[in-house]
Image (cartoon, rainbow, N blue to C red; front, side, top):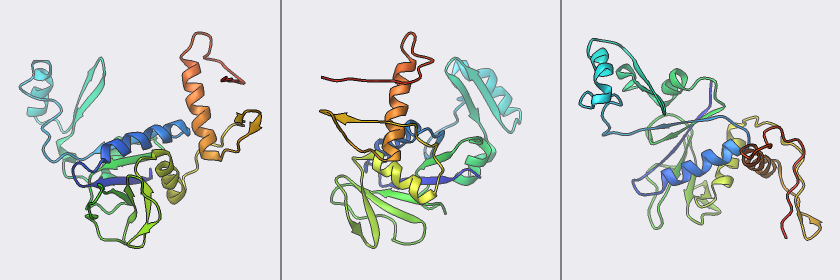
Length: 219
């Protein structure tokens, strides 16, 4: 079963900002990551009033349990039968084949989670249970028996998630980082991020798609 972890917190606490950074960091480490956002006020994806959705909405109204609309930007799916499903069920039904699914919201769900807390605010959730950590801007140390992560450092939060979920990220390729001729040691997570980011950038360049060894020199 695909591991699921939640990023929750009060409105305006910075959940989405942290989540986007964590997703980017995990992707750079070589993992395939899915995301589910809980929205209490959203309407159907396939909106009956929208001209481009008219025929698809008719199929849903006829009783289809699930309707997929394929378009130039991807595929939109309406699945009313999953409206009350929890994050684990949604991940199992919609996110197969991924290494990890991150969930925004669902603070009451029984999944491991990290709560993002705004500056000066108090956590919403009690410590213990499946609350793994708190994340605050500039955070460090511990609070209420929980580790406090720096919400401004999504790479560190991503590393915490990998460690606590015991995910087997792909082994990093050899990476050497030198500053003024002196080698700067990097751990496996940083090595994966550096190699993933560089290879992603180089692959977009003409002639860079089949790059083997890459050397970058600055200064």
